[in-house]
Picture 1 (cartoon, rainbow, N blue to C red):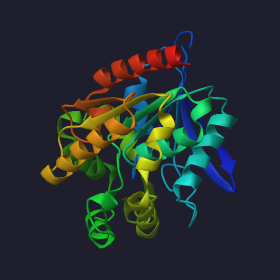
Picture 2 (cartoon, rainbow, N blue to C red):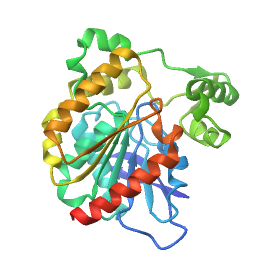
Picture 3 (tube, rainbow, N blue to C red):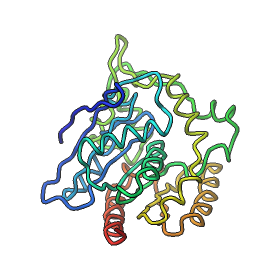
Picture 4 (cartoon, rainbow, N blue to C red):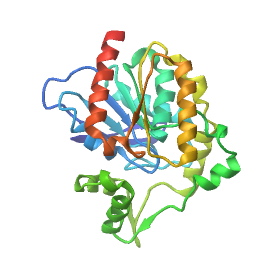
Length: 283
């Protein structure tokens, strides 16, 4: 694995790359993590692709990237990703995005539809959360207190409890990469104010306006089955709506909690390889 930085509009963005152990197959994979995550999130999945180039970005205010006070609209985030793809010469990538990163990936794919191989949208929102609740409700539900840890072992323990059967020691590097050290221990680089900006943009994001733009693209929409009842119902309803808007997309449900790439990396890697094969035929 190698890593480095690039700059867009004065913001330094950190990236990681897993280079193939053998001749690289097309398309390469370009990956966007979710909220409060970082580019090391993709390490477990990248290990399943010894035949592909895998590049992942630390989105702004995450991982080692800069933390500007503004620039969290989806147009800005998609532009960050587009700059990384161009500067790192990731040719016609398959875009992978998880959770909030899936929404950024959708914005990127819709804007770059002629220069990407396809989209793997991994348990991200299929429609705006404004269809489910008001912003007043969402701003409370989606804003739990930001975590602070006395030491790394405390951070590992929390993730172990959250991920349950998805946890293993290989994820310690991912957890550590997502924290910054201060006088009292370890914290997320994300502040409450910036997280609120991101969540408001996500709440207002109009996914339904973008899905039809991908009619000629290879698309996998991966949804986790394990979710609270109200969210699960909304996901099912949204999937039905998107299926009508984009009948060419494969919508697949996984027996997993939210973090499909961590819980079911083998199954997801096989499905992404199949998506890449469909993308090669489509183009």
